[in-house]
Amino acid sequence: MTHARWYVVAAVTALTAAAPAARAEKCPTRPDDPVCRPWSAVLLPTVYGNMYAPQEGGTFFGGGLEFVLLAWSDNGPAFGPSQGRIRADVGILTSSEMNAGTMVMYRMGAQVAFERNASRAFGIPYFAVDLGGLRTEELGRRWFVDGGIGVYLVHKRSAILDLEVAGLLPFKDPGTVAGVTARLALSFALW
Image (cartoon, rainbow, N blue to C red; front, side, top):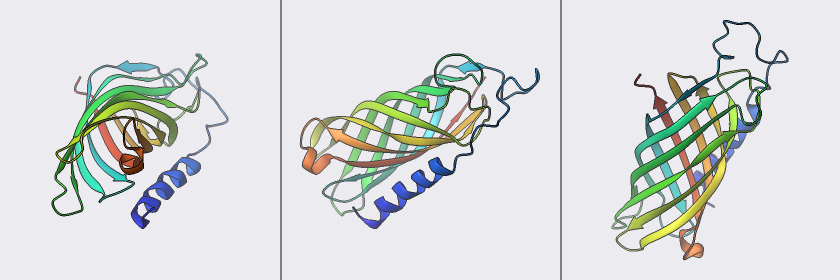
């Protein structure tokens, strides 16, 4: 693993480990506390920056657009994860190696928080899992599954900022195409 990959993995691991513990006082703390009010949102537009480091070849950098089909926050006694998203995205990446071409990466999946009642709108760790594909002129199309961890740096109704690192496992040529992805995404509410 190159130094850049180690730095990305170390940064997300440190952020996830340093995520503050939920307040001793769980929601509801008071009736007008905005963190304790449950909400859900649909079709949130998102922009993101992405890095993909396959086993072989250069590292790819780029960005793309994501559509959050459903996002929610419920810091209460309800069963299930307190925060999460169901998403679909497409991105364009270019390689750090000369003549490697452009990559299109697309996927659909979900993020769900570790905690049931986080009682805060920041520093919330989550799991992520996706099914997707990537395409380059050289490789053609490769379907993959990825899974990883991340942290919601901010998780509010108006904006969600998250950092995620995932391991990408293709269904074909895992010795060359498998790798690590990292992304920073900003979702915002239009209404």
